[in-house]
Every structure is written in structure tokens, then in C-alpha cells.
Image 1: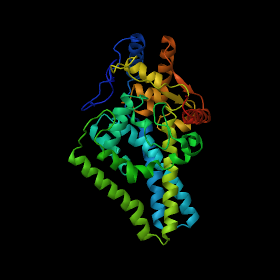
Image 2: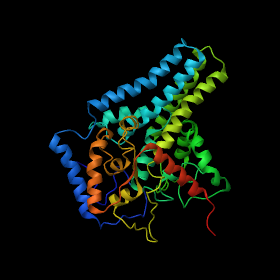
Image 3: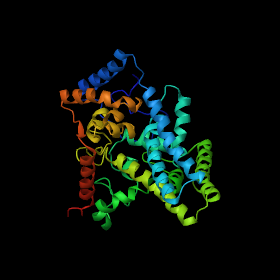
Image 4: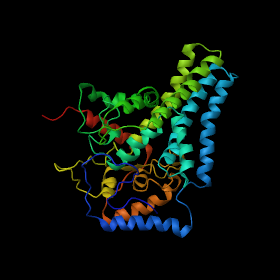
Amino acid sequence: MTEAADNTPPFQGNQPDTKIRFAPRGATAFISDVKAEVARYFEERGISKHANAGMVLKTILILSLTYGSYGMIISGQFGLWTMLGLCVLMGIGAAGTGFCVAHDALHGAYSAKPRVNRILGFTFDLLGANGYMWKITHNVIHHTYTNIPGIDEDLTVSPVVRLSPEAPRYWFHRFQHIFAFPAYSLATLNWLFAKDFQQFLKKDIGPYKGKKHPPSEIFTLIWTKLVVVGYMIVIPLVVLDITWWQFAIGFLAMHMTAGLILGLIFQLAHVVEGPEYLGPDGDGNMEHTWLIHEMRTTANFARSNRLLSWYVGGLNFQIEHHLFPQVCSIHYPKISNIVRDVAHRHGVPYNDHPTLRKSIGSHYRMLKQLGRPLAA
């Protein structure tokens, strides 16, 4: 196993200009035990921590659902209601592609070969998001500074929804438990048309100050966005015998389906009851070592739901993902029992919501709590 050491964040490349330091002490028995026992799981069975045949099959099925639906739409052989249904199916496939293929690939977890990860990582770009920027905001910033208000970019996705107790509160946040879910459905549209461009233009990204981006990544941003606009907007309008408003309904149906699924699933890992919001002291020192910080700020949900686990790429095993981000998600259901048992043995929190319904309910209550007026 080549996972992060006790006090080393799980990322590669240039580190952000941050003064936050995780404690090098405490709970060392848990850290050594959980790493050793997970490593033993793979060693004793002689299996790779990367994708297996089941993961490859899932990749083929998810990509077939996404682009097979697209091909059937473009064929023009179906009625409008059938095409609308295919748009919804494409949205389900697109979210699954993000969960099951791109997420593992961008973490370097899908394959031991960087080239394979890079190629599969482009499935993210071809859905309208930018893989390079995702690796900065998610792989580096979110995974290192999880649930640290003002640093974790996942807590500041939009001022419309207040996701942490330190975020600015506006009058409309008292209603966010009502409008947040529809707002999540705009996630992929935001990625395609706004978010990535805004991030590239920002001078500071989380703890990065004066961040400069390689010209090759700027070029990739431009050409992939043009490709997505070309196949999602231009080609359908040119080849299909439909009006612009009929196209708009289908386009929105696809994106709002994908956006709602993606937006909601990612929120259930951290903005629910159980995980904590932890910040540094005045000198930038965190109370806990990094790995313990992850245990205190992350939650699993619906671990026994095999269909959901298959579809969301193991992201309902978020604890295991944060501890072992370079292990392919196909293995998370198996190693979760190891992590849970070691955590219980050492008195370390293991936040776990038993069902998807209960996790969504917990997120709803957190939205309501975070939207309340600040105490005088």
C-alpha cells in the first residue's frame, strides 16, 4: 500500500500555500492498525488495489448507458416522449460516469498506469466539467482540508446554499432546506457554462495564492468545452427535426437529472449529522492528526445497499475513500468492515447512516439548521 502517512495529506504535486498544520500526535495505534489491516486484506488475497474485472464491466455498462442513450436520441427514430425518457437515462448515465469512472481515474485509483487514468479521466471533461480543476479543488483541497470552513472548496460551491456554520448567512437561507435540492440539479450546467471558467480566472483557490495554470490545461479547458457544446447542443439542433424549445426541455432534463444525483450524493458525505466542522487555532494548528481529522469530518451511508454502492462508485463509503483515495472504489465495501472495526476498537468516530433515506433526511435537517438566523 502506498497511502498517505500519519501526517501527510494524500496528494501529489505542488502543495498549496497554507499555514494549516495537522497534529503529528495522537491515536497512533488506530492509524498504524487501520493501514496495516487494510494492506493485509490485499496482500493475503493477492489482489490489486486498482480496478478488477467487475469494475471494467461496470465502466462499459455505465458508458454504454450514457452514450447509447445519446446515440438513440441522435438517431431521430423515436417520438418526443421516448426521447425525453432517453434524456433522463443519459443524465443517470452521466452521473454514473462521474461516480464510477472519472472519479476513480482522477484520483489515480482506477489503474496502476497513469496513462489509463488520464484517458478515463477525460470522461469527466467530456461531460462538461474540467478534470484538472477538479483535481485541485477536490483531490487536493477537499481531501486535505475536509470540512475546514473557509478552506474546503466543497463547502463554498455557491452562496445560494449555506453548507457550513462559518459561511455568510443571508435572509433566503432560512428556506434553503426547500430550494437546495432543486438547486443541486443545476450542478452540471454550472460546471459546463460557469464554474470552471470562474475557477481558472480566480487569483486564489482555497489555500492556493496567486495560482497560475499551465497553458496546456487552459487549452484543454477550451477544446473540451467546445466538444461538449458541439455534441450536446449543436449536433442535436442540426440533425433532429425538433424545435429549439423541445431541444431545451431534453437538454435540461438530462442535465438536471445528472446534477441532482451528483450534487446530492456528494453532500451526503459531509453535510449531515455526525461529521464535524473543524478549524485551526490562531497559529494554524489543527487539533487532530490528518487521518483522525478525516474520520471526524466524513460519513458513510447505505453501506448495505449493493445497487446504490454499485451505481455511485462506492461514494457511500466516503470514510474509506478519504482514508485510501488511491484504492479503487470497487474494493470499498470489503474494506469498510475493517475500517469500522478498527475505529470501534480504538474509540475513533465512524459516522454511518444506515440507509439512503435516513442520510437524505439528515442532510435536510442540517440544511435547516445551517439556514437558521445566527444567535444574537
